[in-house]
Amino acid sequence: MSDPTIDLSGGSGAAAAGGSVRTGAPPARASADVDDDRSLGELVSSLLDDTRTLVQQEIQLAKVEIKDEVRKASKGGGLVGAGAFAGSMAILLISFAAAWGLAAVMPDGLAFLIVGLIWGIAAAVLAMQGKKKLQAVHGPEQTKATLQEDVQWAKNQRS
Image (cartoon, rainbow, N blue to C red; front, side):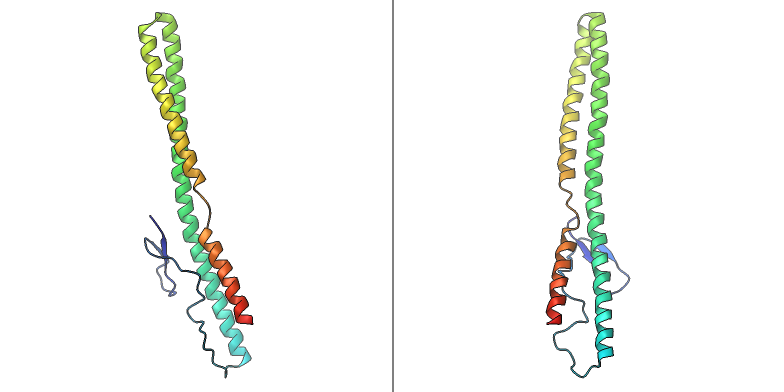
């Protein structure tokens, strides 16, 4: 899944997989050509509506981004868990191999040792892959960027 899609129209669809994400533009109601005949009350009301819409959009974007990051983290956690299981199997089989190797003085123990070493290699590979996946989790980067753009937009509206 690449980027989430956010419905900015205020409709019922919240987020779906696969499309594009809002780039941090101000709410759809805001426009450059403001009617100069509006009263102070109308301007304040418009500002409050735009702010409410902006906050709702930012919250929606953060939810989508965090959900995606949690999905990545859960995959990494699954690989770490698989590595832990493989590690326990390695310990179990190596222990059996050592015990049977000492008891029988060769063939059975050697076979169990080979199987145990294979499990040890699998455990190491899975643990490293899981660690790499967990390091790829960064948080809601796009939400941070759009919040900074929104702050800049708000500053520009004041001047």
